[in-house]
Length: 427
Ligand code: LLP
Image (tube, rainbow, N blue to C red; front, top):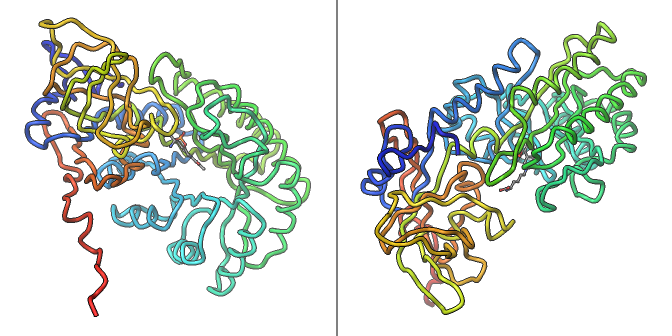
């Protein structure tokens, strides 16, 4: 966790200046808690290294799409990487500029493409020839030209979890590197298409710089080949994917990471005058918000089945899906340190009727029934992946700003879960 977001003061965990116990008291549990300062600091760590270097930092909002957070990042100068029409509407809802939006995703629908064209997004990151033809047809029907990049699959191994690795040939993402040149050549013949860039994204939670440099190398080679084919690019989109420290990972320093990539781009830019203005886009999600958020939960029961000890908490896999889906490790701390009982080895599990419903396994914690726990590094892919499984309303989201608790989203009500459902009328 970012120390701006979480510190222990007098045995008690605080987010910025607010005690987590006060948040639980005011808004209940489970609750997502985010720190404004930590989000802004994360953005600034990239932005300061990118300043004056022809970079647009887009936030991949799939990591956390709460409007309060999007608004904070937009005010800092972020653009957005979106993957659905729903995410596009979120940009509009905060008064964001579609001209700073890149539209990624492997399955864009007709309606999504049309809406994005009408609003004037910066670029469609195209993932297949079929999608290219669809975008061309829709653009022509609107009397427009659609700005596109081809997402190339550079076939590099990002060394991350197989579910979140996307840059290998076997993945469904992008267009194979050796096929991309032909797709660009085809794109250049389409009246409704304007080629503006090249795009790649090799995976997520990558904690080494080398795979990014490999991918960049391959992207630049392709850009050279396209240049030889008479296709000039206006931007290089290098995707997102930079990882964070959940446990013992040691991701590179953000500024140093960005500088290394941008230095390589500068070498390439320096070769020909027409490359000087080529912009670099990044689509970071996790690295901007993960360490700024936590999930606050309360221990309902302590349970001992002989072989294992459990803390059954009021958060579950529906609230934070990462452990169940990826066996992801999140740090867990007791909100108030206890000295009146010994720590014990236990699993932190939720109330959902599935063995996969665990949040942390094999942790050593001194806890009692009723205690609060903070599940750290939950600001990315936490709430955005939450569901209503077991008819559980999704958590509240509280954005901490200094000493102020801002309700970024109130807890969902049970009634809201089925408000639009209808029983079959009796005949
Ligand atoms: N751009 C594209 C095209 C993407 O597919 C992704 C993430 C990103 C950017 C942002 O990646 P980031 O900087 O956040 O690593 N739910 C998983 C992560 C899935 C990532 C999917 N794509 C998790 O909880 O670990």
